[in-house]
Each structure stands twice: as C-alpha cells, then as structure tokens.
Amino acid sequence: MQGLSRPSLPADALLGHWIDGRYRPVEPLGAGGMAIVYRAEVAGGGQVAVKVLQDALADDPSQRERFEREARALFALEHPNILRVHDFGIVAGKPYLVMELLEGERLDALTERGPLDPVVAIDLAGQVLSGLAFAHGRGIVHRDLKTENVFVQRLPDGRWHARLLDFGLVKFADEQRWGSGKPLTAFGEIFGTPAYMSPEQCIGERLDARADVYSMGVVLFELLTGTWPFVEEDRLAMFQAHLSKTPPTLSETRTDVVFRPELEAVVARALAKRKEDRFADAGEMLAALRAVPSPPAVPRALGASAPRAPTPDRAAPPSPVTTAPAVSQRRTRPNRRIVWLAVGAVALLAVGVVAAAVTLLAMR
Image (cartoon, rainbow, N blue to C red; front, top):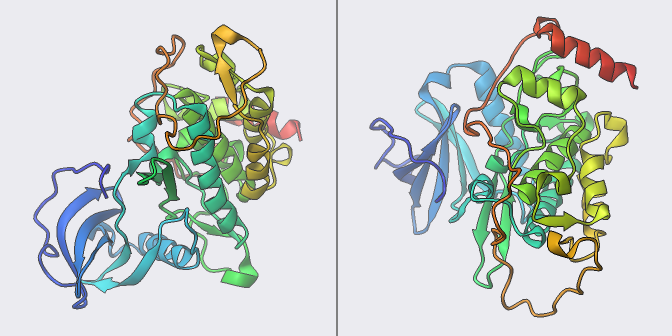
C-alpha cells in the first residue's frame, strides 16, 4: 500500500516464495509492532497485500488471538468503507491475512500537511462513520480508531474514498452472534492510542460503541483543525486531559475559519466525558454529521455571515488540504507514530489520573 512507511527490513524467507501456492510476496510495504505487510503476486494474475504476524510474536497466544480476531472481524464486514479481506491461513507457523491492495495513503499523512477543507473533512469522516456503523450494527467495536487506521484513495473523478483498517483490537460486543470467546484485555487494562482514547478507555473500563464515537470525535476534530483536541507531553498527561479537561471548540483551535454551531455541537457531543452524553453509536453520529447545513464553515473574515449555497458543479472537487494561511494557534503534536501502550490495573496509574477518574465517576 503506497503511503505506508517503508522501514529497513531484514531479508525475509517469504520474499519470492509462494504461500500455499497462491500468493508470492515480492516487496515489503511496511511493518508495525505486530505484523509485516507485503505486496504479493497472485497465481493467475493480479496483486494483493499480505499481512503476516511478526516472527517474535508467532508463539505468543495473545498476539495470535488478536491477529485472528482481526481476520474474523474483517471477513464479516463486507462494506465499501472497510478494507476487504480475501483469505486467511498459516505459513511457516505464522498466521497471515490476504487483503486488497490499496494505492493511496493513510489519512494521517493528509492531516500532517494541515487541516483539510471542511467539506472534504466531513465527507471523509462520514465515510469512516459509515463503515464503523456497519461494524457496530454487527456487534463489533473497533477500539483503536485513529487517522493512521484509515486509508484514503483519490478516485478518477477527483473525490476521496476512505477505508477503515486494523481491527486488531476489535471487541465482539454481540456474544449471541460471535460467542463470548477469550477477551483480549481484562478489566483495568489500558490498551490503545492515548491521543484518541475515550475517558473510560483511559481508566480501563469495559468498552462499547460509545468509545469508538469518542475516538471518531477526535478524528473529526483532527481533520477539521489539523491537530488533536488535547496535545500533551506524555501518556499520563493525555489520560488526565481526556478525563478532566474541556476540549476547545473548532473555531478556537483554527483561526482562519468560523465553523457552524451545528458542526461544533456534533464534535462536542462526540467528545463528551460521560459516555451517556455521547451518540449511542456511529450510525447516530453519522446522521447528525449529515444534518449539518452546507457549507460547514466560512472564512473568519466573513464572521458569522450566512454561508453561501453549495455549488452544483462537482467536476472540480475541493482540494484535500486548505489553501488558507497557516493556523497561528496550531499546536505541535508529539511524534504520532509512537503508539503508547499501558497495561495494568487502574490502581497503578499516578495519583493525578486516579483523582481525575474519581471526579469523572462522581459526575455520573
């Protein structure tokens, strides 16, 4: 997949060799802490992406379970805004996934170049929410939503198409459909990417679709402003912010435009501290986002004047990155490719986080 980082990888025994006589890895596309992704040829023609669990994790039952859960989830989710999986198997004792080969880039690559045009941002967020709503409707909670887990392609007509990736932390909320299975995390464990984690995820509570809604609130905020609602120096401070800080508004964060109150309300509700105050699931958030009048923002020079009616000409879609002057109040983010992981009981967190958690619980 173009757009993925291409780290220096050691020579791999899989390169140039057929997997089950059907897929021949020809090039490593990228690697993460869990797996390596290859471009592979298909017997009979065509190309796919093959994701193989790292050697060091192949014998770890919890990592294999996580990898196999992703396969199980993706096989059940046939949707235009979710990455399509073609096959699953075992090679050299390691599980692998065969996925469609996408040409494009990750959504975080767009946001790192600056905030998106509000119309484009809402369109892309709506596509991600559409795929997520499909998953929620089938009892699947993603639990690791972030711009790095969304892949975007530019279509021939100029529009952007988004696909949701990486269901490695998936939770099957519908036990009748999926069976209870073995949980990947226990109560009190914290697993995810802190910049996008809901307050309940920060303190190790059990999660449902409303945790994904919070993460989508962060994603939407990032698309519209080019930064996260909370930018902190370390994991602990980020947890504290999610638990106790009031997020800034979009218009406070981005100084070149004024956003519609209806759009501000969607983001604020998605980022509510109490899960009971958020949208019930991605489908409800999607409906609210689609109800935002167009255009969703106007240049700040125009203040709160009535927005213009949208143009019917779709031949020239807006640029994915706004050409407005740089945002003077944009805050610098830490290296977003560092994924923090904290595992342990809530009691092991610092006193500040526990105090914030108590404050949050007292609000209920």
